[in-house]
Image (cartoon, rainbow, N blue to C red; front, side, top):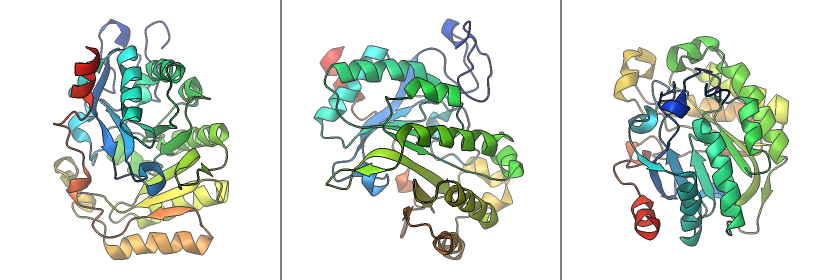
Length: 306
């Protein structure tokens, strides 16, 4: 933040969050957590067998019309934690056997998160830190986290400015997100795994295939492969789920067909993509949306420390 005017995300809304004003993201200065739990629905090298120690932050700088986490995207839902409380949450999740600490939609709390990670590491945190984001990031903000984040897990949602404007109110999405991914790869380098197959360092770029938009998906896959070859992993996702907000757009009123998804996967293979995750079976079911009415470990954290 500059002179109490928030410039952390590409919206640069200049909200005076330090004095209680909420930004475009829906957040003021208070760290707000909607859920903290062991999460099994990430890529296998992130979830492992124990689950990823996932911290869902309330609010979002992007707010896509089809967001599966829309219950928390406006920033109204969740519990307030201090920076010290967040640090202790990381250590609690480590004690529960988490494979890593997975920070979901963390952008608007990046400075506090950096402080919490530093404190947790001093107090014995050894797990990799995963930064799980929409990809709509400022490189300047990501530099707060250089040396603290081990694994970046960004989306790259759109190539088309028309689509990013229509569905996410972000005509600059592709240029902004690709610059962010470049910074992430610079920080992490090539992927590194431990003996059990868990990622310890690296970048996985996620792309959600949207119904009727396979051309844009191919453009994204082509960009990623031509830019990074197999120095990153690409996760091609089929789990788009029509929700109430997205039904205003006829193209988004249905799920992705198997034919559409296979077309994108086959294209990736034809390019030479080797480091990729794909989804099969019932990945589009709404059961993959977390239960944000259950805070997970937040109750236990309160009993232990507050």
